[in-house]
Length: 462
Image (cartoon, rainbow, N blue to C red; front, side):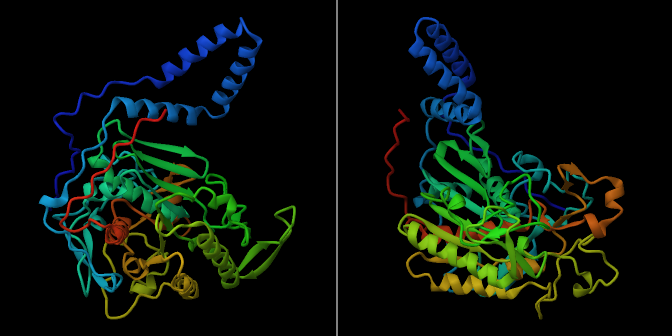
């Protein structure tokens, strides 16, 4: 089976060899100087105390700021990607239904990257490294019926659009799945040493330093505040939400250029949702309301926040629809199957939709809210139907549970331990990002056969 060579990073021959900045050494040197001065002045002693306290409490942030600031002085920005000499980029018209189509096998241009070459992937999604014996799930592209997607994800063109900007996924682990995919799609063109991931609580940031751009993921599985807002310690079973409280999360979304939201899978454990009472002091003070009612309250809060806080001239908003759970093999003609285990091919009966028991009331509510928002447009990206067919592409038994690979004993109990929610990478989320890519470039003023306007270089931070 022919497989394309891995993508390679390109750098300009004129780029200077990258020096090796030593920000931690600078920090420790500064600390020694301040300690020496502290012996001579009580005022300096107070300053030193605050400095050491800040270094202790915010050490990672201080190191990151130092690295990024020094980096700005030592390295040039990436050259402008002049598209004037390229063939015009043909994008599907906004009226084309990209969700209506079929999966086509393609082992020539796919996968878009190799699992082992994207070091930013987490163990949750590295199915080959985790022992999956087949790899054919990587070689399927999505072909809409009425139009065509660009033949490939052009990372340089995309990052030129992202230059000096922030893109943020907000939602649950499926949006994190898509964020990891996007990082892997763009990272081959970034110079070694000029790309980095920084984690700060609920926010994970991928820095593309030579473009002064960030691709970010913010953990908020219900969009509004909940008792599951800790990205490492949370429970679907005991989840409780605050439908009218969003500012604790939303304060991090301000001034972002591209916001991509999702929320669905965390709602599907029970028919009713636990909702904390207004003005209550404890999470135990809650009521249970029907799922769709709680979902509607959340989207009322979310849409009002967008209308009151987002400038559509600066920020584009997207919403990703339902990503399916494949746990009913009898629905795709495999009554003896167990969840998505041992599935190696997509479902290919396109004559009728595959029923996976989605709560389509929630899908319809999102579409209705988005279509009613005139001040801040929301682009709904329908990934549901195309992903329904991909029973073969989940992490299944080749993932992790509580930070560890599944044991042989756990693998012997696939009904309990097979993950048929998340997706192997490379895989289906790459197609979601290809569609997101087309919609973002459609909003860009230079996606056709024209060079981008000249950009003024930004001065290094003072």
